[in-house]
Length: 390
Image (cartoon, rainbow, N blue to C red; front, side, top):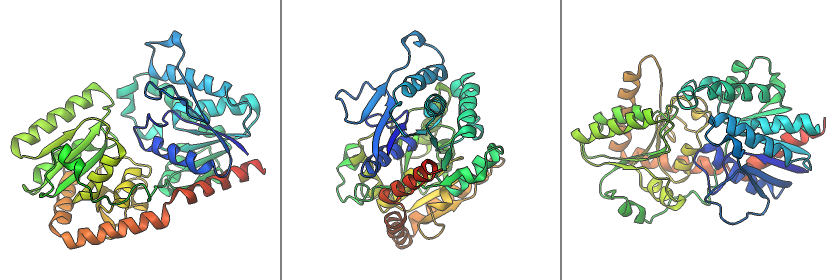
């Protein structure tokens, strides 16, 4: 079976959960199929990678809207997969490549929905008119795909709600995974010292992009009510827009006026450093307002950190309330209530170290037992085989 994986992100350019998903899925799939990866061009990838082909946006579109540039990459990807038996696309940035390949070569198109454009209206702030184009690309591809993989049951429900013309039998659930040999508790604290984190004081850790989706402004407002002894560590970068970047900076500065130990790490850290920060966090915070699954919660759990997360999307399928962490209901109509409840949950976990330890251990056990990438790859191949066998 010859499979073409189509994606924007691939190492060394991974900035979100979709990129993590493709990185590890590709690794495991190679033991089960002939896999070629087609991704965006990279300035960081200076050496060729076997089985990986990078595609650049058309030079004539330099300076054009990002959505137009994305579609030009899709054309290049589609041109490169004529020898594949099946293509599997990830995110709207690559969905049209899969759709065009299906039309051009008559091969099946499988797409994994990591998020849905209709549920991310704030993207219009980032993409302008390109959001209308990205929404069209997603709708066109998803409604014609031979199979759609949802990363959670909650995501499957969202897909069928947003795209009612899609037959339910075409939508399969295959959860995101985690490499629990890579993500595991690390006793080393060198990363804490490097980034100014006091190992003698508990800290709340956030890891994620500065986007509306990740809800980090809610966390910054909730942090006003954190126990004064608690540090707040924000591994937060890649802001979607200048406006949300400015909002984030202002909230950080405002918080620093009322409490110490508000640490912002704006760059994307090497994975070993992130693992160390996760391993020693008193609690990991995930205040997302929309999250199909949330790989970052799995990463925290695999490193033994208790998780306090918003009860949205697929998060409750990963974080078990009062077992591996605490879930906080989110109501977009009452953000103040959410922020107050978030602060209460974070303070509660920090105050009860025995419960926090039990949650961290249970989270690690759950990640190992239910979310290994080898099992995720086998479930994905089962979808391929079902489609190819029709």
